[in-house]
Length: 301
Image (cartoon, rainbow, N blue to C red; front, side, top):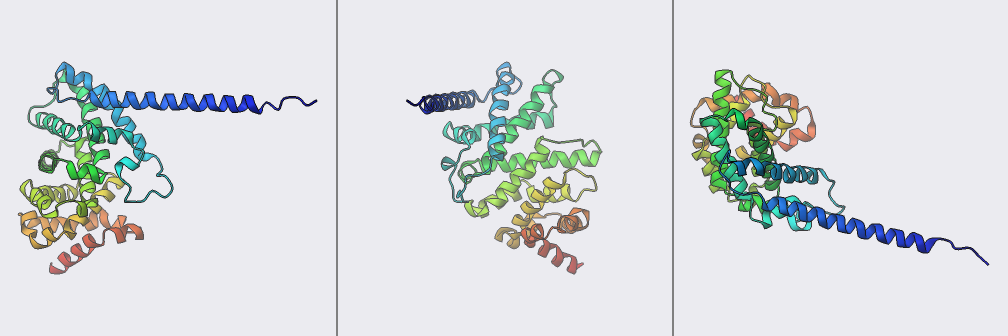
């Protein structure tokens, strides 16, 4: 008497689409893991190293995309990496690639600083530096990753990058560092500052002193040259605030600032960019330890 409503066909279509999406997701996940496994410690500028850049770009692109995804409702700060949805970083950790990426990035940057990049490899080198840096940054935003990161090598790397940047600033040869280690190092410091409570603070701060990280960081930030954009400076200020708020810095200021002028340089960032950033009340509260320290140093002068 009645014609078919078509609901059975509709359910069948929905089921088929759901199965196709599941299969697609599994294929994409398998492709991602295969690209992660292709990340190997090949010799810098070797044919294998150049070929690996494609996989590095693929994984870094997904990691950056997943980082921008909105968090699930109810997901708090205590959510672990394995409870989240960032597959790229999860696979990096599961395959034991984090410190390998840090090591080959440090090796590359050391070569680039000391000997320069061969013209024939300039394009691959820039892509390698950007994508390896993105993967390292996306990884250490997670507590599980920063706790297993090779902190001595990371601090040595940051010290070398900041030191070379200072040399370029002094020589007037600095340039646009978008996506390069000279910018990424600010975000590494931001990650460390954000995770201080999960790290052995004294050991980390001693490494900062060994490699002159705090002093070099302040010297770069106080340079009259505009190196970083507003967003990067906000991260830099929060990182610096975490450093000066640490018990180690409070107790061993002179080890972090072996040059007495570093205290004046720190004070100078107030007029250079901090006052402008602090017009945002929420941001001003977030860097209160830094603002208080600068105010006390200014009073001494």
